[in-house]
Length: 134
Image (cartoon, rainbow, N blue to C red):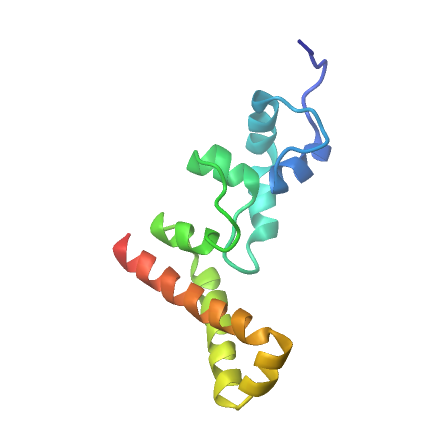
């Protein structure tokens, strides 16, 4: 059994954002680091698409992080999407719809973008449905 003589410092931020990896932190050390740095990480994460860092999922939601494409839906199910995250998802879906309407379909199919566009629209629709059910 390994014992640490110090609590994890700011270098634990990376593990809290994406999950433990190369560093050897115990669950207790990561939980303590989340208590210290969690708000700072969440402030940094506030802008952008609907997602949460690994530490939030484990120490706040009490569950393992879902796959990236399922994360916005799970956040909607939990009632945890912020207005700006919902707006970001809506903007992505609206942009995809606009590109489809403008006739980029042929180019999108040829370049494999059509799937990405459809996934963006489908994801937003699933987020809205999950939010209504929450």
